[in-house]
Amino acid sequence: MKKVKTVFKYIFLIILTLLFLFPLIYMLIGSLMPNEEIVSMLDFSKETYKSIKLIPDAFTLDQFYQVFFRRAQYLLKFWNSVIITFPTVIGQVVVSSLAAFAFAKLRFPFRDKLFFVYIVLLILPLQVTLVPNYIVLDNLKLLNSFLSVILPGTFSAFGICLLRQCIKYIPDASIEAARIDGASYFRIFTGIILPQIRGGLITLTLLCFIDSWNAVEQPLIYFSDRSMYPLSIGLADIGNSDYGIIFACGVMFMIPPLLIYLYGERDIESPFTTSDKL
Amino acid sequence: MTRRKKNVIKIAVIFFVALGLLTYFSDEIDRMLLPQIKTCEPVVDYYNNDHWKYYIDECYIPKSAVVFDDDSAVVYAVNEYYDGETPTVYSIEIDIRDSDELYYTVEMNDSLMSGLTATTQLVYHTSKPLSDGERVFITEEN
Image 1: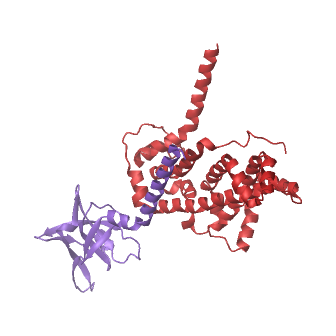
Image 2: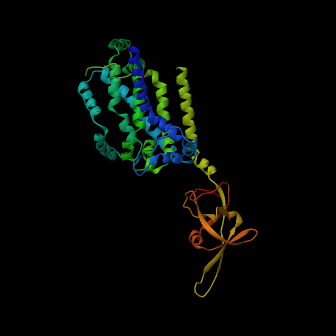
Image 3: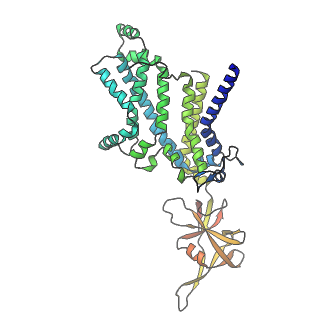
């Protein structure tokens, strides 16, 4: 009976895994198909698939050849994504870790009330803050520049809440001992706090990277110059490009988040494993 | 740092450097991969008559400019002034009347009349087969 249960469990998990992996597999296969073969699978009149082939009739690297050598606009969009994402991630990690340390270990007036405001900000969906952000950025003359997406992403409440949960469980005794020895708060932060929240930092880096890398709404609204659009918008513009090239761009687009995940896979900590009653 | 992490960093560096180089040299790479063409002006024969002052009757096209496709003959032309963009070729169907060693005598039909303008150059040499609307790189103009 236990064996049967185990078998069913594994079958269920395998089916679920295949369901989740199917779009990724289809994208990889589609990037190796000629464009004509991809189009032959589609029924444009009913906007559905006539058939789905997972084994192409003819393998070709022409799509990658087009993306890497002949159509530089996709490479430029990739670098736009890099320009938007990397400063946002670095900024958010630095700002969030410092702010989380203050909220978790330092005592100042209205600390808990201010943190409650950050929790409320977490609950607000992005779309609610788009218009107020637009007005602020317009007044700061930052519209149509990369800073219009980088700055709001850098000062995000999510990272502060995540890292506060990690820092909260570091014993106060170690901080007090360091204070007695004459260490400054910055020295305590870099010498005691940062090494112990490494998992949280990597988790924040990965989540922030994925969020910024896939950003579509903010660049669409804050950039009027189409040459500044990141590749996430280029991929969404599927109607104006060859399908095979979109698949190849998708593969290229997938590589940086995959590398970051592979780098930090072992160190990722779930924020839910150390829960706190607020 | 574990060996796995070092490998991931190596792959990431190679990936970004390769993409950076491909992006930086994208114009040069694209130019090298475009068909390299040589162009010339068509020689147009015209005569006066009482009704029309300039009537274009025949055109002389180098034999190397003509491409035979199944039953038809086409020439590829490119506009001399392309406003800084990469020039593109377009095909014109022709009717061959006569030929000598170097040239075909071609009837000035409707497609040729509309295809040839004062700034049109004919392609007489190409490094790769051409297709309608393809971007090209002009190496020599005559």
